[in-house]
Length: 96
Image (cartoon, rainbow, N blue to C red; front, top):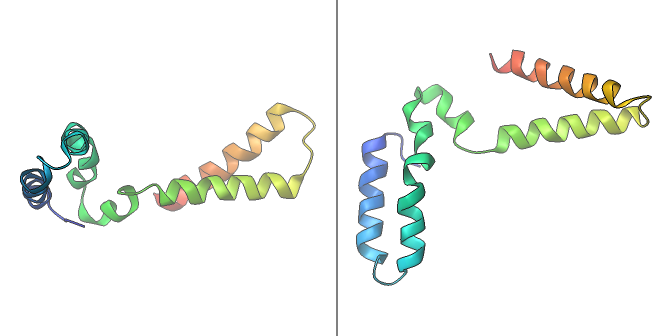
């Protein structure tokens, strides 16, 4: 829930110090992936809430699934791809 990288890194260091001996392997995994996990903090704060989790992507995939179910049967693979592309392009426009 940190809003700044420095805060998140200091909290991670405190976590490593506190639990490093007790949960060695888990802490190693945390340290290895910490840089990637905190990448969202490099973006402006207005964008962070949208990119720090996969909720937005999950919602997009649900919408594609919903729209393809409504259609039911597609005459070709290309028509399915076209519909999914349109749904994703509209979402991209909304995000922009």
